[in-house]
Every structure is written in C-alpha cells, then in structure tokens.
Image 1 (cartoon, rainbow, N blue to C red):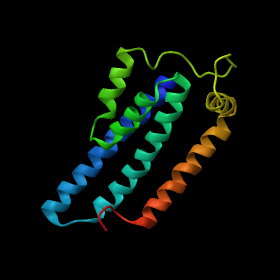
Image 2: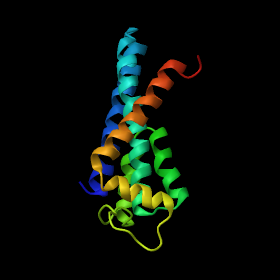
Image 3: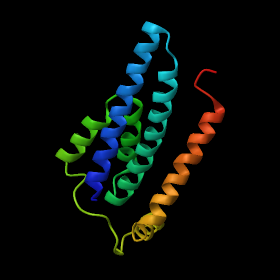
Length: 147
C-alpha cells in the first residue's frame, strides 16, 4: 500500500469512529444507555491513536514540515476533519510517491530510522501497534477526561 492509500484508509476509519461515538452520545442523551459510549469511545480512542501514528510515519516519509505533521495529527481532534485534510493534502500533491526505502544524501537520523523500518514492515507495524496499545492502556488507566 502506498502512503496515500494507508493515510486515506486510516483517516476514513477515524471519521467513521467519530460518527460511532457521536451517535452513541446522542443515544445516551436520549435513552440513558451508556454502554454504547463506552464501546464507541474505546474504538474511537484506539483508531484516533492509530491515525496519529500513521500521520506521523507518513509525514516523515513524505518529508512534511513539522507544522504540517502537527496539523495532520491535530485534525483527529476535530470531528470529521481528517477526510477534508486528506483531500487538501491530495490537491497539493503531499501524498504523492511511494515509501522511501532507499538511502538519500539529505536524510536525517529520523528519516534513516523510518527508512530502515519501512524495509521491515512487520517490525514497523508491530512497533506501531505496541506503541498505540501501550498508550491506549495508559489512557484507559488514567480514565476519561474530567475525571
């Protein structure tokens, strides 16, 4: 999968989970049924973190500026903002090209690390999944916002 397709799939998934969470919040307000918020909130939280990790890997691969990378991650905070941001990136050709798996003269240590991990996709996916799961568990232990 290209950086464009990976980013697009995860940005759409993030939008879908926002829809689930907002729907569950409306159902809870109308009926008092709170389990839906717990389930949808957990799913959304996990996909939110996965989107952030994906956006960072794609940002490094595509050599986005730090501001653009932060902007990509920040769109996950606003309901449904990841898809319009994805389309904005597409219009500006910021998702063009494949994964950088060959060395370039101007790469930083971070680019070299991502290039190394892209050459070992199982390692990359495993490390990203472990990082997302670890952060998710820490946030679950911390509890919901405002508690």
